[in-house]
Image (tube, rainbow, N blue to C red):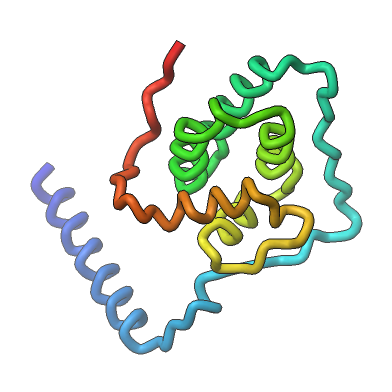
Length: 153
């Protein structure tokens, strides 16, 4: 067991030394961080199904769930705290705009980049809801958001 632990420590040190040397030698820019590939034309994405007869309360419940289960922690935290703070007060049109924002986009990284201002928001999604989300992401209140809000029933 001791030999295995020693090997792991040596390997970790070697990897960290290599990583720190390469990180200090490279010139990083904001563009280096964003990896953005165009969607291939030969992969049609299914359109998100519209639910025209869905009751408002049920739609809000679905959006709370979908805001929490995005598949990437960054959006889970941003969207779940946003939904917890604002969704209950949204009217029918605002709820529909939020639904379109989180379900009409094929790539969650796009939502993240738009909300954080790393990439410009396309006109279709540049709504009052997106502006509210951007303000939420700026976090002027300096709220700590390291976990999702508790669910209320």
